[in-house]
Amino acid sequence: MRHREHARPSALIAVAALVAALAAAPGCKERPSPGGPQSPSATKVPDAPPTPSTIDAMPPPVPPPSKGSLIEDERNTIAVFREVAPSTVFVTQKRLVVDRFWGTAVEVPAGSGSGFVWDADGHVVTNFHVVDNAQSLIVRLQGEKSFPARVVGIEPRKDIAVLKIDAPKEMLKPIQVAPLREPLEVGQKAIAIGNPYGLDHTLTTGIISALGRQVEGAGGVTIRDMVQTDAAINPGNSGGPLLDSSGHLIGMNTMIFSKSGASAGIGFAVPSTTIARIVPQIIKTGKAEQVGLGIQLDPAHRLERRNGIRGVIVMGVIPGGPADKAGLRGLSEGDRGLVLGDVIVGIDGTPVPDYDALYNALDGKKPGEKVKVELLRNGQKTTIEVAVELLS
Image 1 (spheres, rainbow, N blue to C red):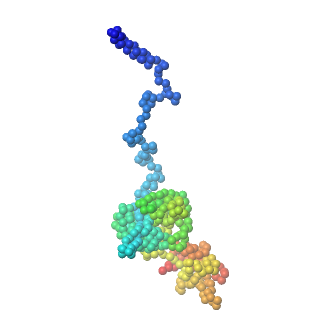
Image 2: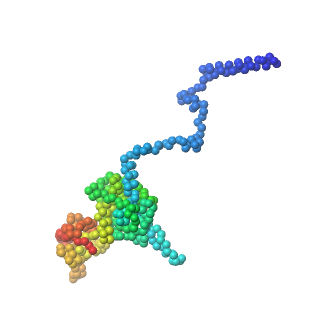
Image 3: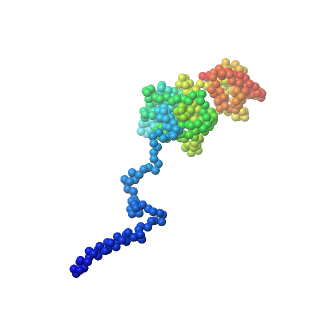
């Protein structure tokens, strides 16, 4: 019994020596994995699942750009938005709804669009179709301050309207119009700012896709020289500014070509050259100036369609007007009814098949400027020079 007790320490020492010897032997070393040697931490300690604290500490997959690392185009877009956003406004149309049962009346929003500040006197430019049939209008500036607006004047044939708000001058930042000496080019950058779907001050970018487009306007005639862009224009963008990379106004967003009502990458804007010509006229007189020949005609083109005539029939000549002085002839009474006089078929070499073409051929002419009017008279073509006059 004692022998066993005295022998136990020596046995333990022997076992320990054997274990140490086996651990030191080459055959007992840890085998590398088939994929190659691994680090001690990878083989001895398995990866722990990430905890919320470790997830928060993990770096993002794409680190944010460092200060000053934005590309030039991004810096330009940001600068244009910061400069022009204060000039862009939100236009809300309201209408009075009467509840005859309860005998109450309340104003409710009936449509919205965008616009831009024209001058420090509080004039705001937007589309005619944004304010059409409005009973009251509210203009909201960038700082969320709203003001009642009144209509100064409209030009439906160009889809232009001018409003007036009584706002402090320090809250008004007029937009800058692109210089006439810098013609637009297809492919140049285009930036649209507006309030699509009522979302305050939204920016989209694109390019000028085409120039000189013709689009049927709200006033019954074709709006010509429209700017086409692929910058997204959605409902609520109407009346907002289309800008170049200098932040200058190059057009007013007006409409889109879409079968679904959403932007399809084909938007149209009234050119800034037209806006710069029409808006001062409306501010000055309440309407756009229009020159004419001093004739009576039918814009609906009913007599022409009935008789299959391609041109504009001179229904009558205003006594003492330019056409009267130049010798143009209107309809007259004959033995068998009306006798056709002159039919206008061209202006300065441009064909005039209808009233729309006649209006656009004279658009932009100045009072007293002479034009060559091509006529059909008794089946023969003739040309007469006429000095246009300002219509009252």
